Image 1 (cartoon, rainbow, N blue to C red):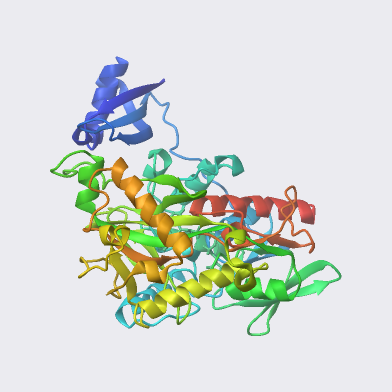
Image 2 (tube, rainbow, N blue to C red):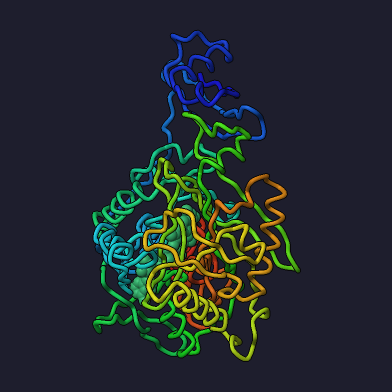
Length: 518
Ligand SMILES: Cc1cc2nc3c(=O)[nH]c(=O)nc-3n(C[C@H](O)[C@H](O)[C@H](O)COP(=O)(O)OP(=O)(O)OC[C@H]3O[C@@H](n4cnc5c(N)ncnc54)[C@H](O)[C@@H]3O)c2cc1C
């Protein structure tokens, strides 16, 4: 027999699984000794109450009725099957590869960067030696842009595919089952590399191939059909191509433009990273001057408003996280955020960004298909110079920014390369900075103490999604002008975030299966 029970618990009670099971049994009127197992189905924090409560839905099992926590996918051997080229080993490319194997095709996964463990060293050098490796950084390398991140897995893209399947595949490759039931699941930068490595092992043991340090530089084409790709070293790989190169591969967009393969400029959100002491966010969100205590998770926030016809919102919030240098080349300054699985760092950060449409930009300078990308690039160079020409980032205290006052000094930060005191109204274009200032006043009224000089704005948050869309057919997911090309994931403009990119990878793999006709 199974019985589902809803529970509302204190944070302390919810942390004790044995006690939860006993409570659930009592509520379900099932004798404790008859319960043979329990699965948590849903868990969320309700911070609107004081003290906050944990809402839980659990399933009790009696006798031999226990179910598996998640469905396991079987991967057949495909070493001798038809091959499909997958360019980019981010979530889109990795999950496309898994799906191809499941469907009986052999993925040849080509990745410009190195494996996820070697990549760690290049990432460390960013903060310690302030050296950017253009092929191995926070965006490029095995695992893609999400490999060193907070690993948030919450998505609104539920209509684009089977989210539970993606989460189950992550669990099958070593993720904690918490992600199956937490309302806002996340993995953490300390757990992601092992999961990515296990996915690679599945691809290899199933007969697929993974090639690192293999940058695709051009296409093999035959009258409107793509036959394969050519790498920087001059190797060729033949087969239909899933192009999942992410939002930072500017050379790929330039190549597509040069080859007249249809692309268009896309809307993008740009702004700053905002960093608060986590304790302050805990106090605000849990309405408790003592903070979150021992059992509640580091508090999150989410803000959105409209200023002069454009959305301004918080993005990719990292409780207990770090601000990180996310540039992919010399002369650029790009920030982003990540957290460990425990989210126990002393700072909270989020992107605070303004939505921009291609027509918002001065057209003589930033018109055309690559206009938004050129604007993004120019702003990154401007931030680099404002930071002092190193990886130090230009920064300003939050209330000073709103009041157009230069900060006298800057508070401590998690950003490794360090900060340079700057007037961000002079660094960011006024159509971004003025909207941000207005929005911060609105957010400060919504959450008392949020607008404070204890928080720092760090510029610039420019890589929130792709500045370009590679146009594809809605039904077949194939490029509208080049048969055999399947633009995929965030870089193609059809996903934003780990789970939605993974879902797009699965969908593109299914489209390739139909294209090949097997
Ligand atoms: C620091 C950081 C934190 C983030 N945190 C989160 C989060 O918590 N939750 C979330 O949902 N999202 C997060 N994101 C966003 C998320 O990582 C992306 O949305 C997601 O990774 C996009 O997946 P993708 O596979 O489409 O592209 P990517 O992950 O960008 O992967 C593209 C891959 O293609 C490779 N590549 C590029 N060009 C070539 C070429 N020419 N030849 C061969 N290979 C190539 C790149 O090296 C890269 O590995 C974060 C991003 C960053 C940078």
